[in-house]
Image 1 (cartoon, rainbow, N blue to C red):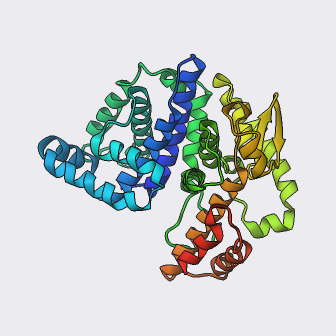
Image 2 (cartoon, rainbow, N blue to C red; image 1 turned 90 degrees about the vertical axis):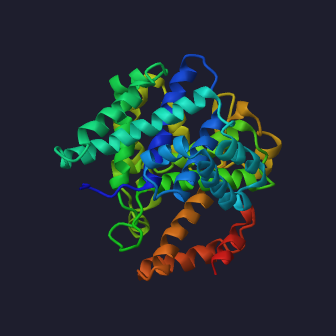
Amino acid sequence: MRPCEFVEMDKHAHKMIVAFIIAKAHEEKGLLINWTHIINGGVFELLRRINLTDIKAPFYIDIKKRYPEEYKKLNNNVYDTYAPILPDSLVEDFKKYIIDATYMDDLSNDILKFSHNYTSKWEFDKIKTTNPDGYRVNEINTELEDKINSYNKLEGVSLLFTSKLKDFSDLCGQMRFQVRWGHIPRIPNTSVLGHMLSVAIYSYLFSIAEPTISKCNKRLYNNFFGGLFHDLPEAVTRDIISPVKGVIGDDQIKNLENVYVEREIFPMLDPLRLKNEIKYFTQDEFSNKVINNGDILQKVSFEDMNKKYNSDKFSPIDGEVIRLADKLSAFIEAYESNKYGIKSDTTTRAILDMKEQYNETKLCDFGLLFKDFD
């Protein structure tokens, strides 16, 4: 018996936030983190689990142990499903991750595995509360605790359990209980947390596939995590739907969001001094930005982003790409519900408005992308 619905997208969004915290703890100690492996490993594993979602984890592990050839066929099937639709520059890395299992460095792999087990335990704690005497509850709880404890050597694990960072992680995890689109009926319902991950992935894939975007490592990192945290203020304000924003005004809402985030979220980040980075992600999140000599420059043109600031030292972030990813995610949420027959004036109008608004948008072939859905 489950007190709420658990969704793969929500779980992986929470997992990537925990991975971000642990990896940042390593950087704080002066250790080198391969952020490309962290991001790609998270995205690739999500794709595998979407493809194999009906197979229980213990059963999947037993297939790997007892039937290696069949296990290989499963992973070949995952590769064959996604290779034709991934950006060309990711296909070889995807193959190394899915088929060859030679892609990940040990530290990145450990961070992602810990984060996966930590968020599994977070979910299971909710199930355990409603099934205190359930079948195998104590056994599963012990197994998960043992897995988590096996990664105690990782920097940041003890910090996560003993500091305000745990509160931050919990707050982010609870965003899976915040349903998108207010009280408008949709199928499937989607959460703010799952939406954040979809925006991160779309933004990342746009950044890789778009030929006009020069791709320094920091830019790709910022576009992924900027997408992942873009709706973080909603953890303390809830999802304010567009009609309400139109009445109150975007500027007024943004000012209040900043007050709430400053008061309730930023103090949780003190152990790793992450305030400035999260602020960079969440304030004016849809503006192209760079950092030049300590100053944040906003509304930077794509031409200048590519020619002047495409370097890790400027920490470029394509807010306009994140906005497109946000709009695509919202479009798909409305489109899927209408396709399944649960229509409303709001979702139908949103689909038409976004098509009209972005019809001529050349960046990331966005206008053509909407036409593909027709």
